[in-house]
Image (cartoon, rainbow, N blue to C red; front, side, top):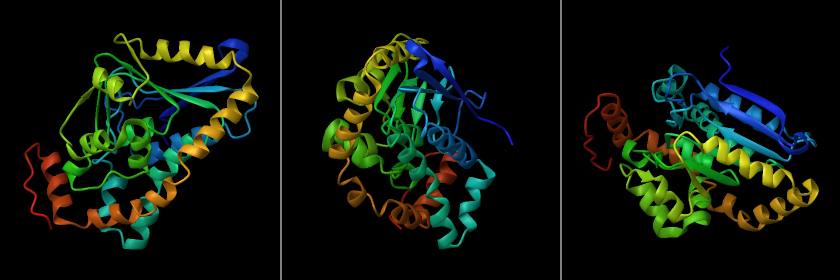
Length: 268
């Protein structure tokens, strides 16, 4: 089995910074089901780690991630799954973002190049995001006949408000530049091209210099208050996604994407 994720610990002040790097080495960094599992396991590996205060998550040099891998054989097998099997398979994404959100350590995303779909869902589950000036974000799910799930909508709503969330999600073809993402509040810092990781590590060093227990307790308090109603707001994410995946519009959206043509949606 190919390992897409590497973890390095013991960095920075008092060795309290860790780096998780997701890199498939193809310049696209798509999120296959196996990649989702490996990234989830990476987050969970810090559950009993009292030596790490900050975790920096980064992708490849050209892409944070292109989002869910529509060409992956396991991912494409969803088309023939029964409803029960499909619902279980669709929980891979929400499980990933929840694992990263619930980490006790402060999490920082270092984003180079593009961050698309599920990559945005993962990024907004982190505490902070640093983005290269020439990078961009995009949320293409609706353009593929799907809904934006993985509990992303409430997380985005907390960060950028209702109108911007609708703009980001509904206008599926719109690229959100680093400058726009910073203005909206989707990212906290913009760095020079190729320097997002360095900027994220500088921020991590500032966090790591603070008292670890106080930092962890503060994060927990802020997250509990902020996300108290998120489960209620997004409890139908998986079922909405499963329902949308059965639509003709979804089949047309994926076919158009793979065929590099403009889709024709008919609302059925």
